[in-house]
Length: 555
Image (cartoon, rainbow, N blue to C red; front, top):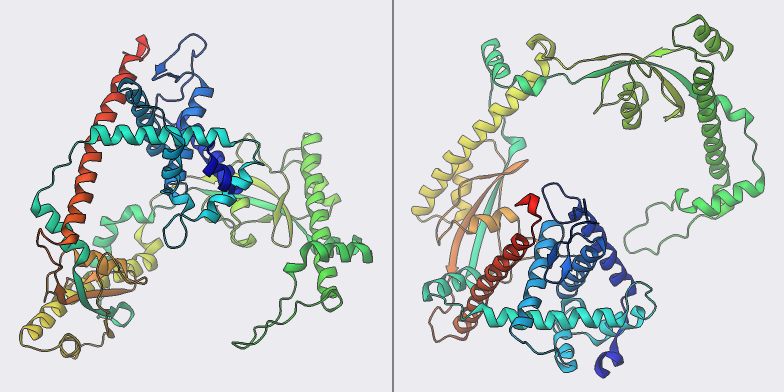
């Protein structure tokens, strides 16, 4: 590659292997995504679809196109930043930029240019955001042992990225920016906010909500879809408890020890230690041996239960025995089995008798008139074989059947509506007291004094959007978009509370055109606007090339 790269390229084998594997997987996802022509290889033996030197009808070319783009994006971002259609679009635009580089006679990338480019890649950045030679050295060291990716491939992708970046700069243009736009972005990013919040606890808001038949009928009529009873499986089960097979289990000391060695983390952990105390040592084998033996016996008994259930299922199949027949009853009697009718259950909520097992529910809904019994299924404490009777279709219940649930939903809905109204009233009261000169905390306390709702106030340390507090509530950040100094937000409804945000102060940054921050922001916006234009140009080239190479039958 280059001497500087050869000096430092080490250690990121796992990272790059994961990136390439992820890119390959994503390429398959894109290749077979509905509605996408990319990756469809019907008649690929007879049709060649050229795309800037790639054949989109070739799986190999598809993998190379997406693989290069995935590696490029991940080196730049430092993580798996693009997937699906975003990765496909980036891959197409990247190839279009390289094709345009050839047309514009952009020279080949030099070793020095690659070295400079590498220093700006996020994947090699340290905690301070600057290039970290150690990260780069680790990357290169492990790359040497990678059987799927080598230094030459990485060098080729980097060289192409440098050329593509040059094309972006050529076609991006000057990126015109209005002074108003620069000032608006500066104000948004660098204004220093002094905020206070008031949180109203929904649990303490308990208005009196009468529940009348008229109200319930109206609510049920408007929300009947919420109470539709899903299809339910009506089944019975032959249960094989693991405990019944425990006596047949024998374990040797060597088996118990081997089981402990394989599952040591599953056994009694040390009791919780006081804060600051040294962690207690993990219990030794002798201490937990009885638990280990019991677990091993239970596991083996469970296997025997599953085997017994499998034997029953196979006997039914092999003997062509239909459930309900005399032969069926005789078989159950010979094994001392009794069928247990299960409470009808839905696909989403399995049988209550077996802890609502989703696996059992899933298998039950595979049964029907053509297949009336299941294979052996693991169940809590043993195994079962299910026997199908019928599948009840979905239906709309009468109000009387679901009255309790409808009543609870009605009360919750009314409480929510009244909480919103409470928030509007409380905001108005707080706002009036703020205008009268009271502090936010006092205004909230005064406004909430006549209610039983618990309200807590909190003052945040001054901050800017560029440097927000690490634990800031996203609701607070969203409210800032609509606030000016001295304003209080509407109540923001969350799952268990309502939140008011008060802008006690907002200090604007220097918005003059002579300030260094203004110049920096103008340059950033100009670059962004220019790149938007470049991206539009490349998108047009991609669309043009795809149209040009479209198969005749698709035009």
